[in-house]
Image 1 (cartoon, each protein chain N blue to C red):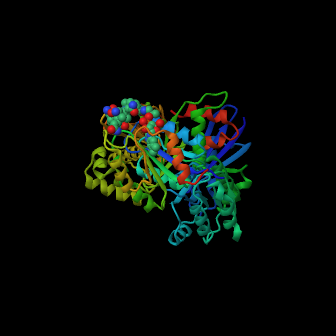
Image 2: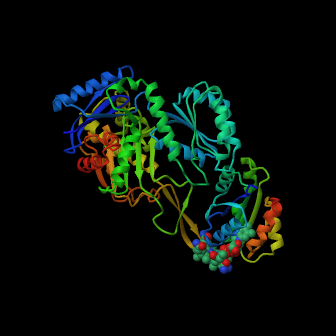
Image 3: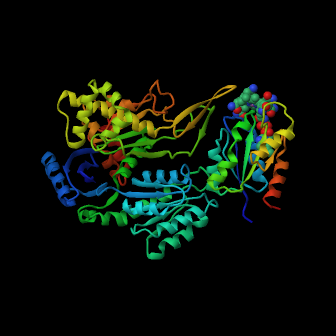
Length: 137
Length: 458
Ligand code: B12
């Protein structure tokens, strides 16, 4: 079967470069076709890459605490660009400091993310979720 | 002696350069005014007559020609995402020496089709989707292109998964179709040479014939490429050298013309320091851009518009009103060569600003991003700041008595640190206007061409 295609990257002005490399290798090893946009990725870059590669999911990483601001409007822009219903995940240290995760999760879900992952989520958990959502066995 | 004739069929001039490959000398150069109506052989014979007046009669062993006559190689490109495959196909076409008359992204509309027909392309480059990526857009566009009235060939260089279907849609009414490797096989990965080779092949087979150039072909061993490709080939040779003869290293070249300004760079252009992140499409090592609004006569207003008349007036040391007057005059008298001090100053100012803007648009930029930790840097396009050679050519430049000072405007400015232009470059002026000829010569005599360039560019 054709590999499912992911677009991943660290959003905004965030330069934390290590985690996304680990995710790239983990997702590739798990059998996905991964386009890694690296760090400092704008919303437009995710969308353009997803369009051109016909991606099945966009996975947003944010570590420096400004994730909430950076992610606002991404779902709307995806819809606008023709990526109707594309799977959207977000994870890392997506907000400043220690806030109750349940509340954070709700806020990001309201923004249109399909899944929201808390700090320190191991790649295996995300991979299992991807396989479920994209119906890969 | 082994004399070779190199011909450049331009839209306004036919230029000839005679070279002896044994002594590695330029025997002479000449050019003759031609118009669209002039028979191509008349232009050539006139230029040869002028040449022989200077050199005496020469028996040529071989003759090669390049051409930008009859509007050059006109191309329309179509891609999917504007910054990705549409941009990749634009870069590929420019690098193949084309005059890009239309760049389209996303799905073509019926209005676009009317517009494309009106722009009379010689070749269309159809791209879209990475391999295994989006197929919808390129398939839709193949259908739209198949409704064009013009019967020009199409090069398909998009998503592998859709290539065959595109070809069968397009060839239904007998249109010539070439399927090549995807210009962007993976996200942000350029692969433009295969498409460029196909473009060049079509140029040789079809375009040369269609433009009446083959009438001259008995005289010559072959029209082998569009003129901008010849110049680009010369620049690659000058930079990289050959196995036995060293090149001069990375370079930027500017060709300042009457209607357009071409800029070439042969340089990697990677970020200079490790804290800089590269954004956007990675650009080819050999890159050509064409500024259609920047030229010394036909596009003279474009220079003033882009640079502001204030800047022109300051540099020319002349009032804004008078500058506007003179610019209007020159735009209507396109073969005017300035004789008065006032006009010379204006031309010098315009040429300097034209070069500054054209190289600025060609070079990459770096943006500072403030973070709580301090500064981070994001680069887009090529960093040319460490390039040490700047080649200057073009009629408007090489006939000036201060070509070096003018060309130096290509360099980086302290008050514009965002622009990644060469910081300290040695200016080499193509005084005899031989770059296209050397590109042609390099097809069979690369080392001779290289040594002549090293000698003649001063
Ligand atoms: C190294 C580092 C830096 C380096 C980065 C160098 C580089 N180019 O990579 C530098 C010094 C530049 C830096 C700068 C800053 N940093 Co810093 N940095 C760190 C540090 C110490 C390690 C990050 C790292 O590489 N971890 C190792 C990798 C493997 O783990 P990871 O990045 O967390 O990624 C994993 C998981 O998070 C997860 N994951 C990541 N994304 C996603 C997405 C999804 C969908 C899922 C499921 C999982 C997932 O999977 C990854 C692999 O296992 C962390 C603290 C820490 N121990 O985590 C702080 C930390 C991330 N930085 C922090 C901050 C605040 C900053 C600064 C704003 C200022 C500062 N005080 O240092 C600047 C921001 C600069 C900018 N513009 O981005 C905070 C963020 C706090 C918050 N979000 O509330 C942290 C947590 C430190 C802290 N406790 O205060 N930093």
